[in-house]
Image 1: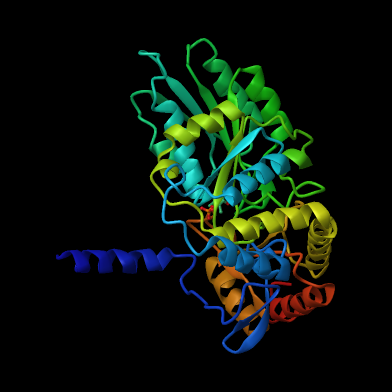
Image 2: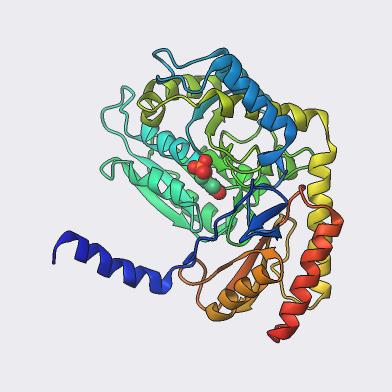
Length: 404
Ligand SMILES: *Cc1c(COP(=O)(O)O)cnc(C)c1O
């Protein structure tokens, strides 16, 4: 077999199981209502939780950013790729998430890859050391890959059951007298398949009781969770108590690109020296940086945006249940609608698109066998009328397919 044959045969195998078999291209901007195949449909599959992706203030900031600071910076940060706006954005994020300092990356994937290895692969003056990372079983691929970059010779990796604080406590306790140099507990703030939250208050308590560091990737929570959208730490009343927070600027905060790590100023200064995706990769472009600054400013000024997201979410959760659908309970705008069979989830997402709702299904291997679902994502960009339009489609398709 030549390499093309090899790849093609593997591809057909992958396609058998692939959740996202068909891309359905948008003919419009990402928004509450999008255009697909010439038709306007209600978007319920994007991470555009706050409607910032196409918000006039954010769009305009991006355009002004290009006018004033150009299209690209053609440099990494530490050579000549730092503009004043990069520093502004880092300050804004620090203030927003309640941390001392922040370092930007081109994505959260890069941020997570940059964080772990830069700490645990360095001797830091200690010749004989071992570190341990404790990771939630359902953590995001970028945390898993970040951990893969950590040398096994010096790093022990331990998986605790999903959101299981007692299991984590047991693992930490077992290791209390093993003389680890660093111990890091890593979790998503929000888990994207279930829409559930890590129990941060209890994770803070148990992690610090065992002198470990708590790392939270708040990608699905920044701008979303907590009364003012500061993320899961705000929702659990532990703002300022998380040692390290990472997140994306590619979801609620504009939806374009960019990621960050926030924490103590010494840590952030260290990452600027040692984090390879920061040191050896290009600066974020000015349009993105300026748009993100505008997005954070908008959130600080207009509290109604996050409030609307929360109201829309509560409304959709209540109404979809009263139609007779089974959902995973929670508070997050990710609302898994449980269907069981993969083929049902697949057929229903196709039927819903025809009925005017853009939504995708998830099935094995992304979620356990027999737990196939549609994943609805609510947005502040939707009016109540538009949510009602989606609910009507759910009702008629659900009845036709005998789900309700
Ligand atoms: C989306 C997501 C990422 C990836 O963010 P990018 O900025 O798109 O790289 C990382 N971690 C979690 C938990 C996410 O949900």
